[in-house]
Image (cartoon, each protein chain N blue to C red):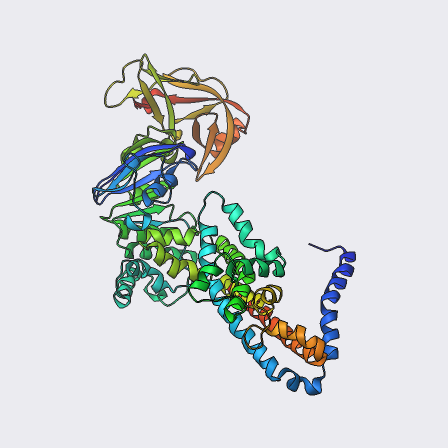
Length: 257
Length: 348
């Protein structure tokens, strides 16, 4: 298909709109002090916390999201459409709203919080709360990505496997999951990226306690007040991570073809 | 191994019964959409019939009356389809070993079984390859080995050669002939050669119903269905017997010789004759006792040294000079003549 020539003008404007702010930010970085800026104790603590919590929430997303995607893609039941829409809700919900919802679920006075409190488990304003907030917002990425892969892969190989005598669990382990592995990997990487950038739900539900709940985005937001140079340097660090993530996703996608 | 199947699949308008003896290979023939594949899918457990039952070796596969449903993996019915559907992430050897491994056989032993079956289909040298590195014929041979390695009680083949290049079909047919010998199998096909070479018995389906069945050579020599006559290359007129002749619903009256026994008046019968026994005329022929049908040429189709003249209901094989002499083309009104002695009449 040949594109009308005028389409290139708004397309180029759009690309510029995305790239220009990144260039502007990179231009403000004090390169001579870059490593000392991102190397401060509080920055390193925030980066380390972000990586740990994002990894943990990615694992949670896989553990919960793979069964969810399987149920959505491979079964039919009443209300499935409604359930699919609900699963997508965290994608469109403002993260701060998600944080408030989590607070009234797991907080000390929340729906489950009181029970958990009795058991001696206080979740709100802990590192666990960070992981829960990140999982809440990034789970849809994994479910949507994997459900798409499962639908594209189809059920024909699974049917063949069953007629060859494979039980449903064997089919899942030896046929279904290997075939959608690229989609699963892409979904996991996207979930990790979303978790790494999580801000609103985290600050609402987990607060901003250095070394416990203050992840990198929160650290950047605080540093912006006191040390703008450090904030810019840390922002660039997150941009680099984001670019690496996109590269990873593209890599797994293209190897799938 | 014996199979008894009796199913109704209402959404696809299939109502059929099928019986299979021990070690017997049955070919299901029929036009597209006649329900052949649906029948196979109910045996494999991929399609749930609305009502009916199936037993394999005395084991109930399903029975809607009692609500019994045995899942596909627990049936012992390996299915081979048009598309080989080899698992793309596994090597050829692991594909063939998939069935044994699913039966909880240790990996090394499963590989021994897989190699044996690969050799059986002349694909031993392909063991280390990935499916994407195989040609269509190679992939289908591996798929046969994979189905057989699962040690099925009953092998189901759904047009296994339909997607293959015509040049590799004869070799594939030889492989199938070898591995199907003495094995219980149902093969869905639209190729009469498959039925002739691979099957002991044929079942002809039309519009979701079994319209005839019997030993392959009997069905080809004495077809009772229009599809059966078509694959045997014969003309078939079905109707009611009236003073020894067959009168079809469309009004043809065909005289012929009653085979076996004379079919009494009022009964259903078919009149069958070869297109090569039919002559084509522009003027109404007179004289000797003949069947003469006024009709219109619909299609001319070369067949070796002959030309098949297809009319509204019947066809005739004539030579090219005859076509030229009579100036035949689609739309030409003609008279078809066939001697009564060339027509076999038997009960339908």
